[in-house]
Length: 225
Image (spheres, rainbow, N blue to C red):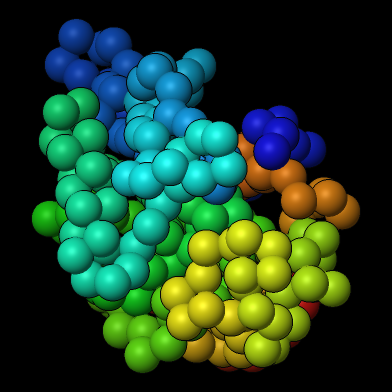
């Protein structure tokens, strides 16, 4: 689960500053690790953005994982994120999830979560394409980005039983990336990686500009870009 990635050009807003001209760390990226991963200490990066790295709400593969179903577990996981951004004084938030964490991020998006109108964007990076996105009702103020490396494509086909690989999947099986993207109303963007690796520095993680109407581009859902 690499945390490095090829840098890409993006339209970025300059770091905001407080009244003393110091970087304003109230912009926060919440990083949701995959199954078997773990959280890390919060840090402020060179752009003045606070990176919040919580640990999942359950054990998995010798580390932690995000269990976002049924509803009581979803609420436990959601509360971890809410408490973390409250504790750090976050005023504007991007959620960046990878693998199992990406599937949880997608569930947050589909539940219409905004964390009190602070959520700007959800970046879903190489998710386990499960049924958590079905009946998706996002808040129109929240932008969405979906990255896919293709590394899971041979396994995560429609109807593949997740128990065969000890994957955590809502509904017990995968639905395939095409159906997953269609349910989200998103285009599939190619990850720069061929392996199942976290696109840690995706350009959308540096863009703090709100989108018009806040919705993802849904003109051609489920198409690879």
